Length: 122
Image 1 (tube, helix red, strand yellow):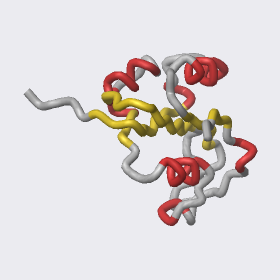
Image 2 (image 1 turned 120 degrees about the vertical axis):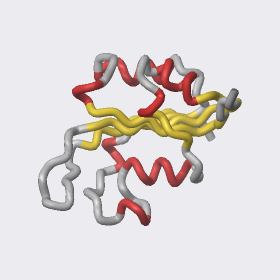
Image 3 (image 1 turned 30 degrees about the vertical axis):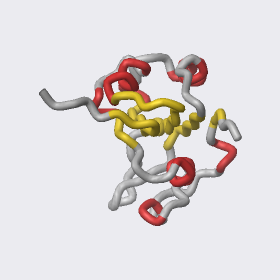
């Protein structure tokens, strides 16, 4: 049997039309997650290579004090594991990705940092 991967940082991505919870409940859900840090944004201004709008979707980055499994994070959102990925980069890179200020996202719409909702502990 394959051992479950455990990590401390995750990215959850889901289209708003497929959210398994009400959009307005996301912040409360995260507040109850026991994550040390979290941040999210609604990407609703992205376009594909043809300039056509991409479906609006949320990106949520989470950082925990102790390692968790992908299945545990998926359960937190009441969603499937395929929408959760281990975030291998630095947590700051994850926050930067939320507003598309990373090397890999430089050609995407740049979101205003004020659009990010976050709980950050220093």
